[in-house]
Length: 127
Image (cartoon, rainbow, N blue to C red; front, side):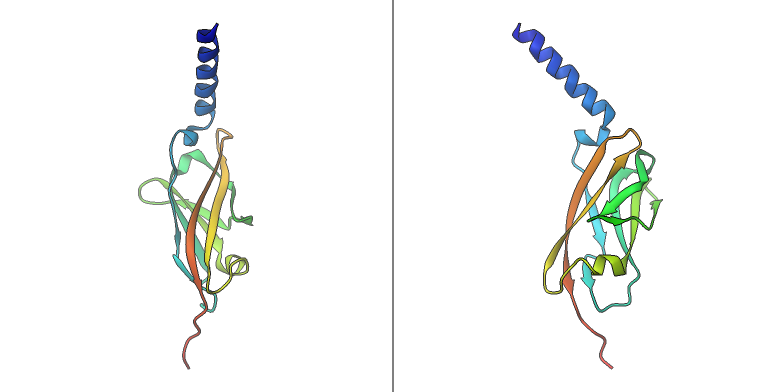
């Protein structure tokens, strides 16, 4: 009886992995810039991933609840997400380290959620 239970659990685990290939491995992201200056004139915050571009439902991706502005594939075939910098600056505080979490769905309807920490500063240009 115990063998049957183990087999059912193994089959269920394989089924989950088949529906969400990202569940089987750790995902890495890098937020750029890695130091967000609230006072800068920057217009884009970019999140580089090691997820295959073809696996991601781009329209489903968000960063701390902020909708994705646009997305692309990098030269290695990985998914790259772009967000409006002004929207990101509104959710972080100067003098802190902010955790930014990228969430979304794969085209096979598996979800992913992965975070990166960025430093937040407010340095104005000298005139």
